[in-house]
Structures are given as C-alpha cells and as structure tokens.
Image 1: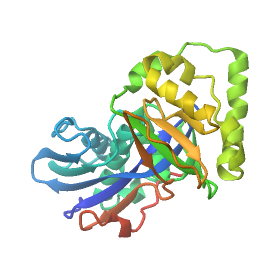
Image 2 (image 1 turned 90 degrees about the horizontal axis):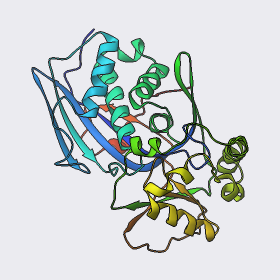
Image 3 (image 1 turned 120 degrees about the vertical axis):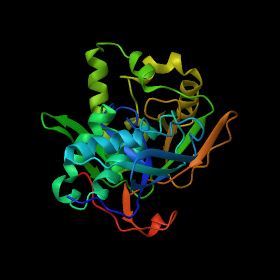
Image 4 (image 1 turned 90 degrees about the vertical axis):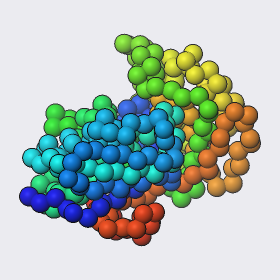
Length: 313
C-alpha cells in the first residue's frame, strides 16, 4: 500500500436532518460547503482553520477531521507519519446544519483518497458505515456523502442509505440564530417512550414526506408535521420553536433543522422570507452531488472536480 505524496481536497455539503417527522432517518444536502485539503507529512499533525470555527476548533490530532481520517487509516492498516490539513469552513458550527457530519465525511473521504488503493479496499458502503459509527447515527452523514435527499437506516452490518432527487420546485431556506445548540442536550430532552398515536402519525407523515419532496411538493406542509422530537425540545430552544410556529401559521413547511437551533423551511420557487431579527436567512439549494474529492486541485476550484462516488445503500 502506498500513500499519495500530493495533496487531496474534498468539498462536503451542509445537511439538514429529520425534516420534521423523519427522525434519525431523513436528511438532505444543502448548497453550503466546507473544503478541506490534506497532505501526508513526515511528522506531527497541523490543522489550519479559516472561516467558521476559526480560533475555536483544535489545530492538532484532536480535530474531528483528523480523528475520522485515522479511523479509516486504521481500517486500511496504514498510519501516515504526519498530516497537514487546511479547512475552509462555511457551515455554521453547532447550529443543526451538520457541521460535525461534514467534518467526519471529509475525514473518511480524504483518508481513503490518500491511500493509493483505498477505493478498492474500502467500498462506498464502508465509508458510510464508518462515518455513521463516528457520528452515532446516519441521518446527516448519508446526505453529506450522497447529496440530494436520503433515507438512512441501520442494519446488523451497519448504516445503509438510499438517495432520491427532490422535485424541481423544492427550495430550502435556513434561518440561523446567533445562539448555538448541542446534539447531546437536544437528545437528552427526548422521552424514553412516546404515545402510540404520535408514533403512528409520524410514520404516516414521514412516508408522505418522501412523496411530497420527490413528486408533489403541494403536500410538504402536511408531510412535515412531527410529534416525536420537536415538541420535547422546544423548551431548550424557545426562539426556534416560536419561529417554526410562526412560519407554519403562514402555511410554510418549517421544521427544526436537525437538533437545532436553526430552522429549515422547505418552499416553492416563489416564496421570499421576511427578515427575522436575530436570525440570518440563507437561501440555499439542495446539493445534488454530495462529497466531491480530487487530487492536486487548486484550492477553491472544487466545482470542477470529478466526483469520487461514495456511499450507496
């Protein structure tokens, strides 16, 4: 096995998970990206971060991208003497937009790409399995790898996912607050059991959501109703809960993005959001590509990279 001597760069999208009723299962990729360049060095680990998280994220081997890379290197039986990373982050940290999943996906894809026969020794399902193990659940890592809208689940062999394309009129807007949130705190708010009627409602809405988002967006409002997680988490993010309620009162299919506190609105082409004090509004598209990886790319030109296929369920 040989390690590449040239840098490898990956571009990974932000994601939004759950989409209302699809708790820990549904997700979509967003047209907002982090770029990470990695190269093998003779010793040590250095991480340069610009953009989101600069001055806050670690600059050594404890960085999440590095930890994900090492997990793949261990899988392949290889450990470089040193690594140098440059991270150009645009995904807001701890806002429910998949920043940790993007770091994990960047790491697993980069590590495989740096091993000359990595793609032959670790297939696409293997990438998804490792990424989901590191993240704890597959709902964000799947769309980050695959792009589009994904349905993810876990089997005895690990995580699996399928990808579908959204209908053309579907456009996401993300409302990002100044405050941050932690997935651990959001999960701690969930009860051990829920009423059978609530579980049944969510099952029906999640099934309808797949149809609404891929075929008939006129059903998006009904399809994004949730009774499994958002209500229980509302006390810890009252501003987010109020914004969701306000948007839904206008007939907008709004939900908490992932574990919050950002809010996702799934809309048609003609909807324009009003300004909300204390919130950034990001008009985005669904990223249909997912993780892009290239070798010897000029920094910042990943739009022209060929795709290295990743993660199929």
